Each structure stands twice: as C-alpha cells, then as structure tokens.
Length: 299
Image 1 (cartoon, rainbow, N blue to C red):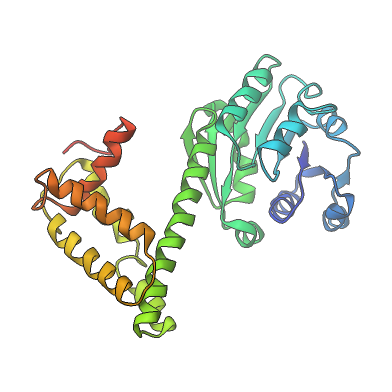
Image 2 (image 1 turned 90 degrees about the vertical axis):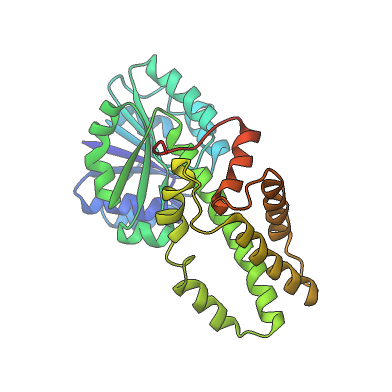
C-alpha cells in the first residue's frame, strides 16, 4: 500500500516517521522540499506535487498548519481532490474548521473517496514517541480502514462521531487548555506578588485537586454532567473562596479578569436562590445562554 503524506512540519514529520517504522511505503510532499530530508533518508519517496501524490496512493494523509493550507491542498489549483482515485482513503490530521472538513467530505463522497478528519493531541513530543490521541470523525467504515495506520502513529484513537466532529473536539479542547493556562497565570501572579514562592505555588497546583484533574474526572461527572446539584461543595462557599482571591488580587494590585467574570456568574447563580446547591450549578447559566444541555447521565 502506498501512503501519501502531505505536510511534513514539526508534527507531520514524526507522524510520517511512525508510518515508515510500521512498514508502510511512504510518498511525501511539502512546500519546502528540505523539510522531507530526514524522511527521504529513512526510506520515503518524494512526490513533486499534491496532485501527483494523490494519483499514485491508496491512502493520502495531510497534516497542515490550518484550514487555509488544507483548502489549498485539497481544492486549490493542482489540489488532491481532482486526482484521488475512487476507493482512496483520505485522512486529515489538520486542526481544521468543521465546515471546511464537511465541504471537502461531500465533494470526495461524490468521487467515492472516504474521508476522516483526525486531528491529534500530544504535540511534537507525543508524535515522536507515538504518545498521541487521535480524534477521528467520519463514517465508521472509514475508521475501520484507517485503524491500522492510526494505531501506527498514536496510542489512543477516539471515534468522535460524524465527519467534522474530530475537528470540533480538537478546537474545543485547545480552547479550554489555553484558557486554563491564562486562569492559572492569573492565580500565580497574584500569589507571587502576595508573597509565596513561584515553585511552591506551582507545586501546590500540581499536587492539589486541579493537578489531579478532580473536576474533570470526578466532581463534574458526579454533579453538573448528571444534572445532580445536591451539595458536595456549596455555591455559597465557592463565592466566599473566590471573593478571598479577588480581595488578595486587589490588595496586590493584580488584575484577575477571568476570576472577576467567574464571580459575577456566581453572584447571578446565588441570586437565583441556589446558594445552598452544589457550586457546579452556576455552569447551567452558560447552558441557558447556549440553549443546550451537556449531560452524560440523567440525575
């Protein structure tokens, strides 16, 4: 089986390398030919264009910087869509726009080409060690065909649903990750200005509930994600603790914009008469605004 791989940058190169290690015959292309040097030395073949690569491969994989590049490679002049043979499998590892993924999928479906959107989490380091998560959206039949290749590059593969859902999962995960980084930076800057050593407060965060992901793995699945708001830790206590943090921020003249926004949410929830309910009930305010519920199990 010839596997074509387009986009051999910081993450694409080690992912493609894992396919070589697994014994696949690999054909590669990149806008920068020198980026493929290590793969060519390891046994990959070079293709001069996306179109030429698509025409000779049974599986085509892209791992590109973003939607603009993926759209160009797929639908632009000399793009792969017009050259993929019926029966080909196309796997896109790009962190992408769901609407674009679905548009490409529809075009490919009319040509009898299967597609998965399969962004990865784990970064360059994870790609080098195969310690990646693949979030795969598309038809289950396409996923079954792709599994041997995905298992060659990642330790974990989650089927996320229909086409585009892999991209939804990836961009929402990254949004949560970056936002949490900023929230922690808010707390660390206040703490250091107030007098605690930076290494100490970071160590505390690692060893306490946040570092052990208790909210994600234990507390929210038991409360908010079930719609069960019998108090484990009351909303009133959460408001008190957050208020103490904001008092300290004001005393040290340190902005805490996310914490201040969170306090306003807690105040609104208390105004609804929820002070004695579980603190997670304030998250339902976001559900009201979005007009959707997020539930794993009924209460």
